[in-house]
Length: 299
Image (tube, rainbow, N blue to C red; front, side, top):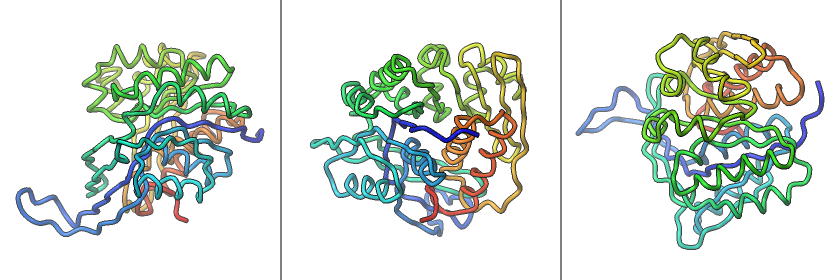
């Protein structure tokens, strides 16, 4: 396979307050949990997993001018991510409370400075990264009205510069709010679209996974439907259909597993791997993620 050229990731930086519950949440009462504060955000997580695979990566994002923003940026730089992160003086760094239990996680979000990511910052950051070959966009950037222009500009500017593009659909609930037709119009003709099972149902209806992937390939050139423990499916406009099982591992925390999967998929595909090999690499990295606590690679 070919060496990986620089990947630009555009999207969110978050502080995760992760609570791994000891059992089902006792609404209106107390539930014991293991709690930790750590770096999060779909784009930042994906960038960190890419760097851990040795891929040159630049993250374009926004944080608040606060201790949390400085800590998140320092963590990413320490992990090998080149940071084109704007500090917004009158905003706070985004925070997500993650409740994890029994292989699922529920998130309560304050998007903070992520809503202030601007098209101008994205344009300037892309112009400064002269060795980029691919742009990966967190779907949250499109789903949040405040940052939508920045997300659309990222895709437009990347295409103008000859970069390939990918989008991770991010989250089913905000997808429902903006509507499938709007989102599919925003991501039309991207080179790769990643969706999980719930997102695929929002965008393509209640079909079986291979049919969902085929349907969505009318919008994106290549589509991967992530199915968690059931594996993943790839479909493209050439009629190629591939599937891969998930590795069986003990699940500790699923936070960031989709971001690790995306990093594995991108590093393999951009290096020239065929869909079967790319899905296998993605599944391997996703398995590492669910086996560890937190959304980022272990230091």
